[in-house]
Length: 84
Image (cartoon, rainbow, N blue to C red):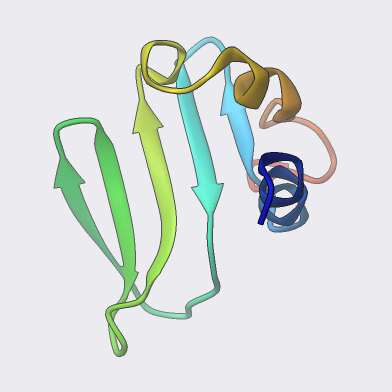
């Protein structure tokens, strides 16, 4: 999947970038029961049953992700975000 296609797929699942907190949330799947694993750069959310990765939360996103990715992500307060 090309980078624009990946961004479109993540945006469809309510991906966002909170510029004030410098956190990007990138969902990769769905789950009703999530376990979060803290790593040095943020969180990895796993489905509790299948262990499938269902989201990534990237802390200090401006230092870790390309600016083009951050620019493509909506703010969390937009109508299609998880924080809406």
